[in-house]
Length: 281
Ligand code: KIV
Image 1: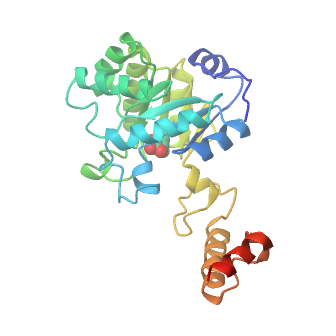
Image 2: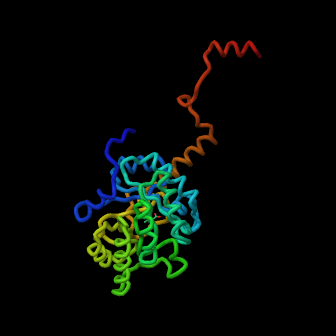
Image 3: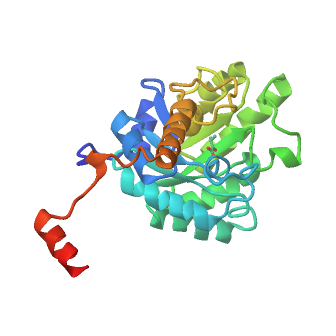
């Protein structure tokens, strides 16, 4: 497919704040990224959620750089307009600033336009170092899936005034460090709205209400590919689990019953060649 529209940039997203909502979606492969691009998604996040929805891990923690770089390469071959943000996996930026820079550069070399990492005030120095090294950074505060299970669990954030104030400080620290956008995951909508007003960069919500500058969802959730996984904050735009199961089961049954392949799926030798073949016997 020829893609003529220009690539969405940090400046474009900045200009959209308060004027036009930003549509962000995860994607991890070539085909889905072609579709996301064609559908008008502004930003594709190659999320470490790939560890769960593509690789079958119970959390995002086991995902490493090698897998993420393969996903990013595939996405970059599919998406020509959408900005591509590579999600730095657990352990790829926490140990040191130099390691964070080295790994962020790997994402850019793999075809990403920016990286995302989890954390607020505590990662601000690393965000600044990455931005100084020329890598655009998207922040991520509120529920932080890489470490949530190790600490307080998967809970809504910003429910109290104290918690909301800490989130505002985190968002402001990220903004000051040069982050170009901030994901707010599972933040009470009132707090998300306050944060959105307090920072000049766009906020991208997931489970954080309509007051954010943009929204992000995991592609598989939106498509309803996993029948049993239905978080309340997700809106399913399709129910693909059953049609996919039915199609695959139909194929397996047809093969076993000899109904596939049919004549239309079959290739033939020419009658002359058949004759020659018979004479060879
Ligand atoms: O990994 C991911 O998909 C994410 C989004 C849920 C924000 O970080």
